[in-house]
Length: 374
Image (cartoon, rainbow, N blue to C red; front, side, top):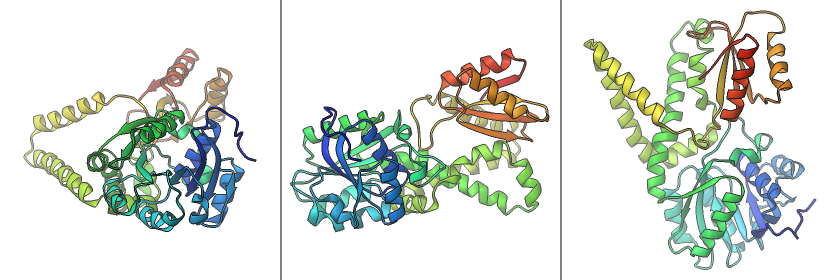
């Protein structure tokens, strides 16, 4: 069913959504929910994903090619893996109308923006985009308009992009609930290499180290708590992260060099051994970590945790979830932690907001449970 074309919130008449995965689907759902476009036409190399996008109301109709999707489109969203973006762009350009705005959602911007300058006619605008949001889930079934809410959405306008076009697209991004931030493409790549790409590679390397350490079953048991939490981001889509790493390899290599030096530093402290230096290293890390503000969402949505210490008794999970449900508290994530350092047997509950977290703590502690926040 087509969106209501009479709604005054419409910023664009027709949008083309190329790629209906987690991010593309979430953007489509947000645009439809907020009624910021009249019609969304979608294409995906997986026809079933495109059909599902329409069934879930992330788009109005499916077409058989990217080129067909962009015909007469005012806004074109390339929600495909980074290394596929330029190929798709070259494919669609002959069908892109004058005055159209093209954007992407890739996690690296430098190489794309440099090539766009050479490819694009003056009659077409391009604003690179990177929604700093994600999920352990992948594909259209994981799409959710709430994924963009409070997420930083980096924008990298091409040289000469008219101010009114930038303003129009910024209004669209704000309308989805995200927070637009305009950055230079290379500055963006350098910063995300440190705070997003390096952590993902580090988590993957940590998992690889443990996986090859022997005593697999025992390690799996012990890793069910803190190790599992600290390597959570290694759950990302391998195809997507492959393209991110390759396309941003120079910035990532620089970040890895800095990271390796940190490992050498703590390694040397342990070799000496120098207990005071180890403590100072950990103190500095803790203090900087605590200085990072709790704002918005990063590459993965922020989850506010509550740990509940429990005895291993039948029905305990049901009792806790029922108790919180009766108080109108929605649990976003739940995990049983049979073995967890300093916690004993416990349950981890995740909430989408600090308010829900604090409310859950108050309810649980008032009912005699030992609960604390992380």
